[in-house]
Amino acid sequence: MRTNVVIDDNLMESALKVSGLRTKKDTIEEGLKLLVQVKGQKEIKGFRGKLKWTGSLDEMRLDK
Image 1 (cartoon, rainbow, N blue to C red):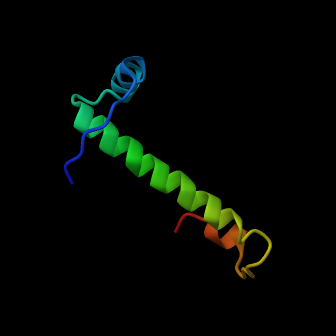
Image 2: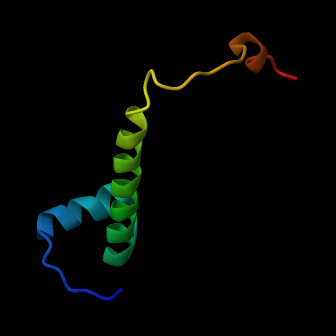
């Protein structure tokens, strides 16, 4: 999708620096992916205490 947006220059410069990405496009796409991931994790938290898990952590931790 092609779009034009106004982004704070200092924010973009900081994002490029900390991400190590080379282009503004890559930086924006990475930021959007991160936003989707973080929001998805918040939805998962809603299941806390509502799911029943059966298994053995001791067995899972054994190297086989």
